[in-house]
Length: 262
Image 1 (cartoon, rainbow, N blue to C red):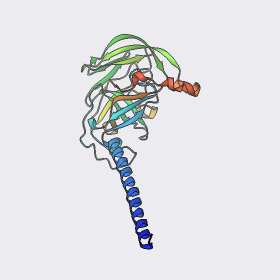
Image 2 (cartoon, rainbow, N blue to C red):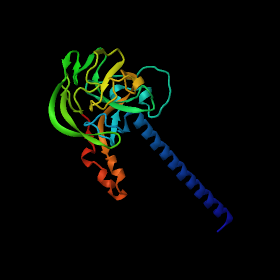
Image 3 (spheres, rainbow, N blue to C red):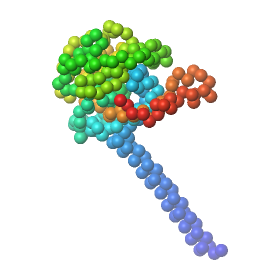
Image 4 (cartoon, rainbow, N blue to C red):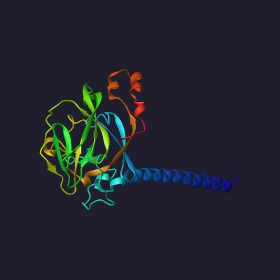
């Protein structure tokens, strides 16, 4: 083999390798870009760490929050970036009954999930554990007893009800006790640009009934919305962490995989 041919072959191989590596890097960059855009513009996964939305959502649920229903703002970006407040692009107001993911006003690095019950201009009040919207009661229908889990993994029996809002949206709630500390509130008129949100586990939720300074949500700014919780894509019972590793597979709640959030 001549020296000239060997040189040519090496150059061809180098060129081919360069093309291969360059192509792979370009493909990887494209995949990362698509994932980033999808996460920022379409939907984003979130994990449920507390029982404040039981029985609708359970500790260990993996949520998928759709971002397009409410438009886009700083809070809906896939990473925490501080930008000037310019409002929301394609902004829409949630509907009563929507389950929303949002940035907690007390610390924007934390994502919380609650149910919207009050829109701007609504008058909201709790009376003996019953929700009133503009003086109309949300009806409560008993639905047996369930098990409410707290953040430490302990469970206790809770009365389950089907709550129907004045606009006809129905969902399940838990009541752990009568005459709880948040069962009676003053009537609050929701100001422009704000929402009133509640947890479905009514006696174990720091929501709009609790001010931010006390660890609650207070009146939630619409600009803090990340998206609408539309589906549970997976779920794992954290209680199995204390069991042997080979038993961990039993923690998957297969009946909750790919179920709608209502």
